[in-house]
Structures are given as structure tokens and as C-alpha cells.
Length: 112
Length: 109
Image 1 (tube, each protein chain N blue to C red):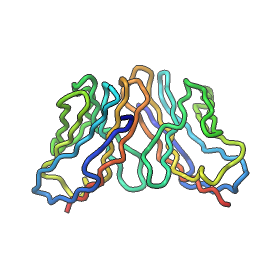
Image 2: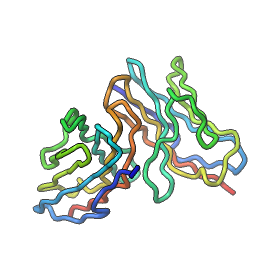
Image 3: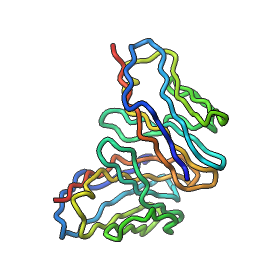
């Protein structure tokens, strides 16, 4: 398997909901990333995991909580989001933090 | 701080004409530069990285440290080149990839 997969494809949630985004790769990559992409804007880095440890948090609000339970899986837990958090959330992985990044198709999140 | 500038939001080129997508960067250390492409309804994918010096799908890009530029070029545009193109920068040994604002390229048949 040579792709990064993300589930769900679409998610609609209320401001009081708790939901999670999932990202998976089976390429043996040891670095994984979450990006946020607003409409007509470039991807913006949120978090970097290297060897299952959080190495970068780009001052992301605590209502976004990342988790890397193993080297193949990356979750993003969402709680008490705001409508302005509506965006496409992209996951990426790379062999290491200095390698080529492979992107997933994204989860389109709408917060009502 | 690292910054990437793509001055053209939109670029239209006739099929068969040359294409140049501009990218300028700002970074105090040694940069690593990339071009990513996103075709319609497809995921973001790497097109080029400057250290590999490869030509992919007829595209080339040369890092010009004096002008702090990494422009993407192709001598003869094809219709399938229509896409969103992002220039991106990462400092050597750094983990953070910073994207430019992107250029939407449209090839006119």
C-alpha cells in the first residue's frame, strides 16, 4: 500500500460535539503531519510527529488534540470547535522529517 | 522565519506555449525548495525538489540563491498541465514545510 488514507472524507459537526479524524499509512514512514487548508489558501502546518512523538505544534488551539498511537496511525481529536475551524484537514507522511511528504486526500470538516 | 511568495494567483497559457510559474523565497539559512501540484479532484503531490535536479513531466526548476528564486518552467504547455501549483520551502535539517499561496495554471486549447 503506497498511499496515505484519511477517514472520514466529509464531517459535519456542531460546536459542542467531539469527533476524530483518522489518518493511516503503511509505507513504513516515521514522520506524520497534520495540515489545515482553508478555501483558496495553501496548506498550513499544524502538527508534526516523528517516531510517534510530537515534535512540532504550530501554536494550535487546544480544541485540536493530535494522537499517534503507532507508527502507521495518526488521529486528530476535535472538541468544542468553532465555525472558523471549517476547512480541509490534510494528513501527510514521510520516511523521516527531512524526506518527501506524501499527502492524503483530506477530510472536509464543516462546523455548524 | 521562512516565507514563500508566488506572485501570480492565476496564469493562463496557450497549449504549446512556454510556461513559467514564479516562486521567490525568504530564508536565512540553507533552503530546500519544492514544487507541489494538485490536479482537479486529486491529492497534493510532489512534482519537483531542487536537490534531485530531475525533470518531471517536462517541468524543470533551478534554485537561484542570488535572486532567491525557484521558478518552474516547461517549454511546451500541455492541456493536462492545468492544475494548482504550490512552491514550498523547508530549511535543511528543519521539519517545517512552508507553502506559497499557489498559482492556478490553466492551459488554453
